Length: 472
Image 1 (tube, rainbow, N blue to C red):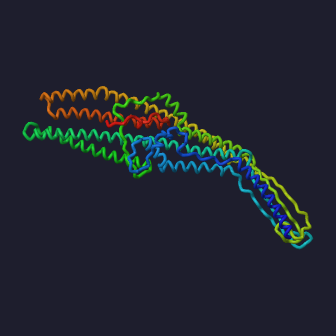
Image 2: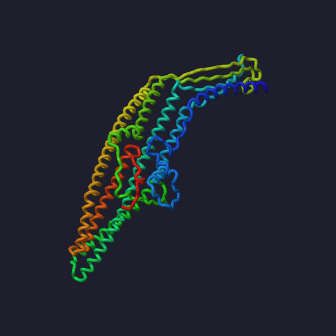
Image 3: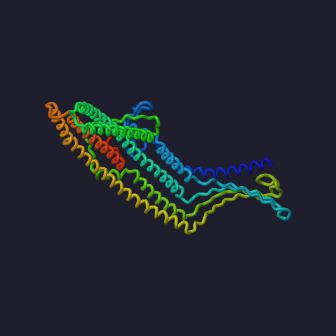
């Protein structure tokens, strides 16, 4: 009995080894794809930051961050929404080995006992089987899962572009608000001096009350402007902390130098051609087109049958006993092999699956075309806006500001000769400050427009914080 049991177990082990070896060979045909480093992706060039900030980054929360590139890098590293998007991509990439693996083998046993009579006997049967999809089905499923995961990666890259644009815009808003605050504080000091001088003249009856009331109104407006700028700076810093995911971070953005030479921007046609080639939002719809084609091929492959192969062993005897072979093993034992397949009927489900894939292919093409048109429009508008801002900066710097300074010089001479009052001189100085504030606003809009253009093109055109820094 013991020898019979051992022989039966060895036979079952051989059968199981054969089926498991076939399953392992099929499973190894599609290896698990590697997951790329989140900060070393090359799909979106704008994701990569300059190497100088990777080396020189300062993790001390108490040190104000003075580099725009460093803030962008920290945002990409720490922003919880971006991290969630990348975790989603990693999770979807792990669908590839799941859909490309074979189903588990089936092991079954059957015991048949015939009772008293001329055919009194017992039969014990063990079978092991494995299902194999039609050739190429597993590969198509793996490619479809990989393409779906890559679409999630393109969505992540698009989110990186949006975050970089938002961080850059908010950074420049805070930087130029700080610069404006310095100008408004300087203007407030001038108004206070004029108010003090006017009050002295009013006290001795040499100045009318109207001038003093006007200066008091200007003082109130300047203080209100300072309060608004302080609130804008505080809100901008809070928004930057939220975007980089660091609640204790502080920032010290400095507006670029007032006389900074404008950057050379390529023509709109070149930028459009570059964007249509590397924009991740367009690549996302390319992935959808790829998925639709793979789904259509998979729907066609579904018309071919899947195979099931198996082997079995049957032991027969007169008396029951043992696990495989009965004790009185005077009957013939037998091996068996089987092959089967499903019958893929051309029903409505299969026809609808193929038609659905073709409709999704058409949808992806149309959505890509619509998105490309939107990107082209965005690039052309941003490019035109930059050109208009450059022209306005040129007029302010070369025409209006020199005229204001010339007026101030004339008023200085008139004041020294007694033909103008101190209030008139201070008004001329305030006119210069007003022109400088206009320049700050135009240059802020210029850098924000550059950030919008970079986001639309998906390529870093300039690095504004690498320019010389100075207080305007």
